[in-house]
Image 1: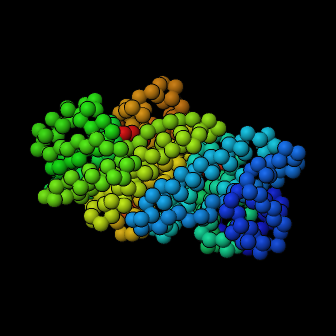
Image 2: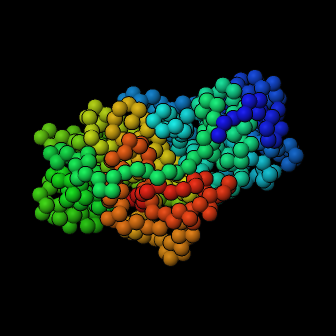
Image 3: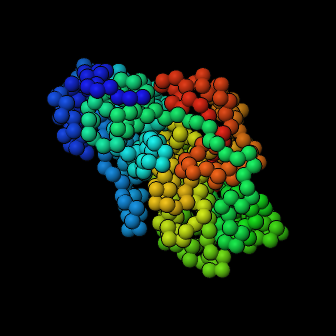
Length: 461
């Protein structure tokens, strides 16, 4: 869709802008060109002062996240991890204050980012820290329809026109690029019916799998060995060989002819992870990575804490950043990150998980932009039960079915895992869905994505 010229006055009194939170100075400067009135506040507390009435709360409040995340230099890895923590914590605090204040019930909070999403595949390089904010806010939108709007700008030129027109569309999420606005939609990925056996896996090299004590980690290990002929796998988890089923997995892979190495390692510990990589023998060099580590700590946005956010970000975000940094010069043929459809759709009750996984989606795009292997698979729901999904009962399954999501079998999931390597996409959403049901929910304020891709599951580890 295109943005009409001179659209700054579209929607609620856009001649009067209200900016809240640190980092608003740059946005204020950009909005001054519109000639409207601008109020800015250091934080929500300043806007929602005790003596203010509901009438004092504007219909539209802008919350900017415009600081670009750390560069891709090796020295910046810790900075990127820190920037992601800070951004998600600040976003969580703002969302919670907004939701707790009854005076804001009839107002909308517009979260304004710069480069958080890749609106045009292959052209945008997303800011990974800002992408995590998008993941959190997407879940908040699922929990509280019509309370939040996400607007991502390429730059701040014509910011007033872009934000005003984007909000006026009624779409809950928009990326503005040039003279057009892009709303998120899923399209079917075009992949071969039967992907070749030797898609990316090199039999003489080693494949490292994180979250290897989980169900999906074990499935992938068996798959790359049995189907793709990989003869050396490094299985990384916090429990290593002591994990349930590890001995059986080792024996099974050894019978096929694979060398199996279990490593006890917290992938968020850079030094420990570097040690794991250093122990991979030169005659079996690392050729592929599958990052499937992850934990859950579900809760509505109002119930989350910075500590609960960090606990979920740690294995996903920190582990991915350090894997990216430490393997950047190894010319890997595969770098696969297990993300989740929770980030794509904005799963209610999984704001911290959505934030962590949307970070992975952005990181995959950043790797592709550097000419490196990288794909993020935003899995839906696997039929195989794991530590992360074993608690789901019939009520949970029925709820997912009502929204069109049905579980994939292991064979289907692994076929999609292979198919992902035959495309040039940095992000794919492998999930089994009833497209008719999904389209029925694709109304403004519900599911922002109108059709399903040709894929399936959700990670564990």
